[in-house]
Image 1 (tube, rainbow, N blue to C red):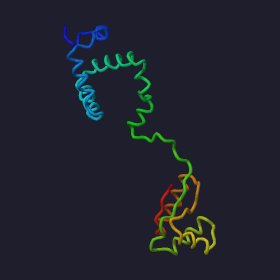
Image 2: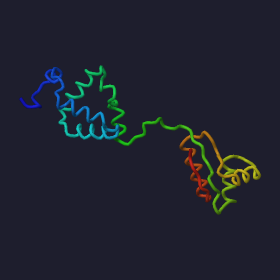
Image 3: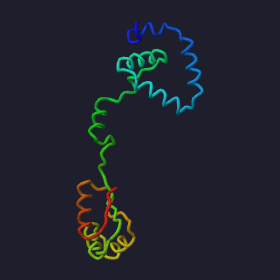
Image 4: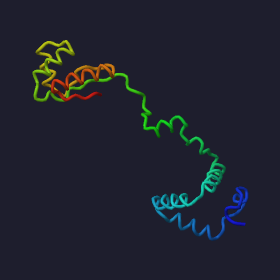
Length: 158
């Protein structure tokens, strides 16, 4: 009978041989990193069927289920598709990073966007990085960003 032909029940009934006991003692002497590398190397050499039997034996031995560790099909598909798993952000802050070379045009655009007076708009631009508008929709944030960038500013959405 070959190793592959040994059933799960037979494996459970077999006592650890002297040879295996000696190997286990040597493995215990290894560092945690070495044991991890050894384990990974061993698992890589198993067939899918052998690995499945091994997982079942571990589940039975330790009273755990490997199924709890498997991600849900929807989450796995999303991750594989590269989609964000975090909830989509629904409000943004438009941050003026710098006014650039066209400070006057940026001040004019800030006044239009915020309805601030000249003095307040100039102060906002001078104090960059500073929030121009907070808690706006993604569409509005992108529109504001486009206008400020067209005026020569550097803008970030947060």
